[in-house]
Structure formats: structure tokens, C-alpha cells
Image (cartoon, rainbow, N blue to C red; front, top):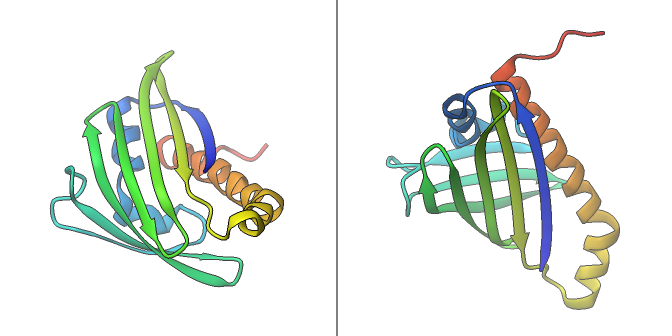
Length: 150
């Protein structure tokens, strides 16, 4: 099982950070490689789903995110199900130092046995780690506004 983790401190209240972070329908505007997201009517209630399409390394990955559990103002856990991805994606939102600490943990199975694990370790893993860093940075920009050049 692979595990990716990342975190970022965002200068904003938990409510605003969480609202931006779990707005899956809005993710295509700031999540790299996400081309499409469609959420069920009751999303983000537990059991509700979002269907997403990601374009990575020349192919499109279709995936369903099902809300496994949600504690408003604290966390949300998605089950990720797709052709090449099965696992969990956990987001936590913690008030800290006048802002919000956001943590993301993705844990998922790697298909393909030893060959798949080797490809993941050398190519896919580093790409996903960079993508997660960019996602967290973009979430901060979305809540705080982009940083001034400088």
C-alpha cells in the first residue's frame, strides 16, 4: 500500500478552508490535472459521491470518491475507487495560530505487483507527491488569494 501525506497552514478560518477544500465540483479550477468533477445532490454527506476525471501522464483516470465519514469543521474521509486506484483520502482541518492547518493523507493499493510497485516508486509516486504539494498550495491561494510577486 502506498501512502502520500502533505500539509499546509492557511491564513483563514476553518469554515472557509474546509468549504473550499471539500468543494469537489470546484476542484477543476485549482486541482492540477483534474478535468471534470460531478457531485451527487447530497454531497458532502456520508455515502454521497463525486465522479472525477484526472488527466495524468497522457491518459485519463476516472474515479469515484465516496464520502465515508465527515465531521464538519474537522475532517472528511473519501473512499477512492477507480480502475487503477482503490484507497482512502483523508483531509483534516485544524484551527492553529489564527488560521487552519490542513493535512491530507492518501493511502491506496498499487496494482501490478512488484512491477507496479517499482513504477510507482520511480515515477508515479514522485509525480503524485509534487501534485499533492501543488494542490495544497493552490488551496491556500484559493482561500488567502494569490501571493503578491516578489
